[in-house]
Length: 203
Image (cartoon, rainbow, N blue to C red; front, top):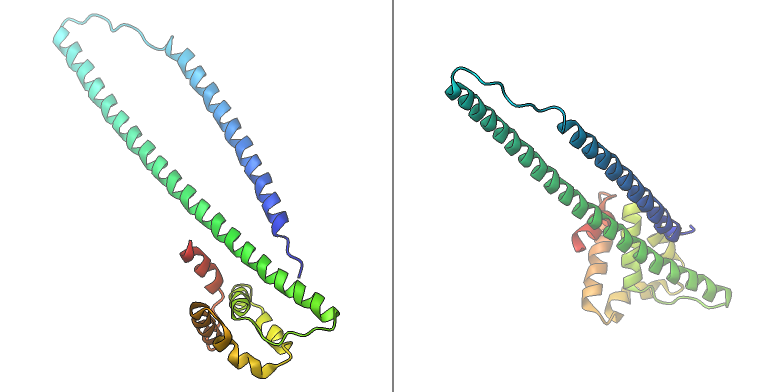
């Protein structure tokens, strides 16, 4: 399977440029709208005519001011809500992008190992031990992508009995523990979203 993560990054940058262009167009449109309204405001107001009872006129002015103040409060609340929702969306967007980037980079590491393995096979060399860290990457990928590469890779290890000693030989007990847990997770219900969820929670 040919990885296209570099193409994905290029596509993301293109989409980002398109979003910037759209944002500039929106800004220009709103600037024009603002200018149009400012021109209208020069002609839509007039002095109120004198009434017999000045107090009634003042009362009417006060009512209008109160009504406009209430409207301004509603506008401010809406603006604050929009800003908060925008910031929340941006944080979620950044988090998801970072999660996918993390997953893509880990898959690239796995691919480099398999590619090197293939090169070694061409040189008449064989893999005698399946590293736990590679098994972790493979299991995570297959749970996300609904494939079965772990079994395929393990079947290619020459010394199959050595696979049972992988965790003993692993110098990192944390990696060994993660490998054991990952292997057990493949038994029973197949969790398709495991990989994506793990990436999201680890950021």
